[in-house]
Length: 607
Image (cartoon, rainbow, N blue to C red; front, side, top):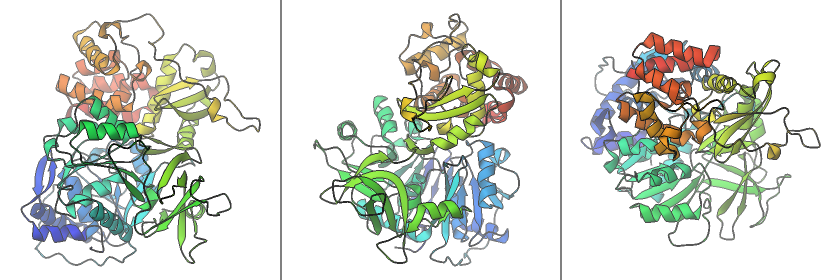
């Protein structure tokens, strides 16, 4: 096994130059083409200042250029900072500023949304260099990439992962999967999610192909869905794919991760797909993608565990005094080993709090995961939930405190809390001042709050709905009692007189909404928000896909945060004037919706 994340790819390119390396709706690259393009781009990046210890941002849509850019950055010895073009501009700017990134790789299509400040290198511009890459030394402990996760302080924090941990992760993939399993690996995770590292490099380091997909829900629309043999997926997304009967036909292996996995879904995966092996994987970002993996057998009654610790991973189940607990007794999981991250970028205090000395191995560290687990008698780990206020929602790690900090930052909000109810992220708000008197009848206030958050947070962190309270429930000690936060109201209409779909566009939209929400189209109020009628972020992705197909116009999830009901969506779709669309967006979401307006203005020609 090679000693860097990218070196095994170069070896495969020499062995199999004509084999397909990347499939996407935007084109196909062979290993030789990917090798030469990334080599030439690396030469240019080195000339512009990239090198060991230098973080280089990459803000690129999901085309082969994304893989070209990541490989090029790694070949310079630098580490890459993934920036999803669909993330709010404010969050992207924070990640660039916080990580000290001074160079950014992008494309003409994504350049307008890139943060200001770093030197910008545009992919697609002519790059010609003589063959024969200048070797760039990579110190074994060099950082390979930085992934930003939700932060309990209200600020996301960057996790710095190094090459040895990545190489160990790839060795584990090599142990678990045959080459034919990885001949077509679906790459549907956002580059800001660490699963993307495995999806790209597990294939390229074994001579397989990466199949780039916009998201897992878009799998049915991929031109190359039949090339996919390996699928990494969150359980809730798999349920959605199976419900729609839209799983790729040639999948051999399925790896679940990001959420607790239940036996019922395992049985369904075996029964309704062609997969012959189903795995359950666990791992925080701080542990380099996976720390444990279980092959879940077919036709068993036991609920899946998250497997035994992977080779090279130390796992301890400890009590509050850092004493090891026997099998069957639950405690907090601490992990150590080669995959352990350097720590958090520019966060020495937080790093010291979470990465602590290993009391069982002198000179080593271990990471406090915050997950509650217990060892089984045969050495596997059984997941039991969280010890803190972090949640996992559709595979994304969310610190509720970060959502609460953003809610409290809204001028209309005095106090706020957040919780997951019924698989949806719910915001709870005690309004401030004048807003407190009108929230009970003013749905526009809820739209203003969630609209403002959509300019600051990724879509998965924006509450599905906001519940207004006179006061937050408190425990006897005066702290927030999350368990007493009420269930959100049942899905309802906008609260005013029913306004049925009337125009051709409204009727077409109501038919799509009715299909997704199991409602009669004629009975849908055109002023009721999608979330308020029972929608969630998974259905929102399907809604964007169905609208794109029905109206022959690219619709993205951020557009659906800008135009939340059928009335505003129909007005946006019917209006061909970019300026008018911007005015509609600004009016509906008020001063806090700069990003939403930009998304609406760019939608006709965007991704």
